[in-house]
Length: 356
Image (cartoon, rainbow, N blue to C red; front, side):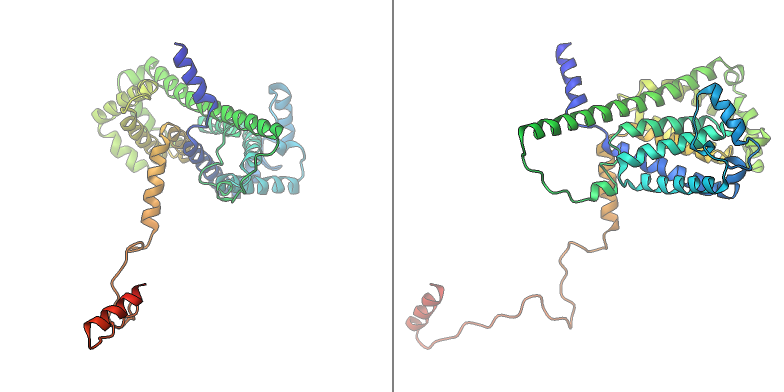
């Protein structure tokens, strides 16, 4: 038991784990929120601005009761709102690119929390998970891989004084502990989400008799493709099997994380979320869940993907020597033959003198 505790402590404080997974979370959530803000740009005033039915005054009254906070309610000026909206767009783009990630991650979390609180009655479960992940990523080292910060050339630091070395070691250890704890909390959050969703479905009668997806496909508010929904609704046996499989995947997900069975389970969960995005018209919610699932993939998977992408981006034949095409000068000039002398002794003496 002591050996296991020592191994766990060493894993916690020695080095940050899942740096590539943290980078994927940063890129995914930054891109999703950027797309979300750009998509709602024509409707920004009706949702979050001064012209919204849920006015800033009503939002401030609710904040007094719930304790929420939003920078959008600090002023009722339209110019101030437009500046906040533009700042949120820029912050999302910089967070996705990984520029000054430590500071920008805090700004990104403030932006997400502010927009979430300003229109709290228009949010869903995907927005709530988005807010939690934005807060968790503040404590992670999500800018160490696949970011602009990682591409910067840092000069090697000298040994310095003993005090500086100790301060640097403490900073690295504290950063590793915060990062590892943040990644653990993110993984635990996703496990709780799937487990609770599956257990709540088990308690429902419609999921037990296999008719839940039938009612889901017939909701007018969540049916962007009515013809496709009606086509799938004509196969009740397939819908029942899909419903039972959904419950099984969600309940079993926290128990398959420590084996190879998690890979097919993750593939099926990603397929489930893509189906939700297409059939129910919830692309942001599905994107948030798909990005959250990426935390369970090891770093070796992302490194292999990076190597594969770098190979595919190279032009064909690069790194291989090719024969000169006819008409092109050869790579090396032709060497002149050695001079021939009439007598062997003289020629051997000449060669010997040339070799020395």
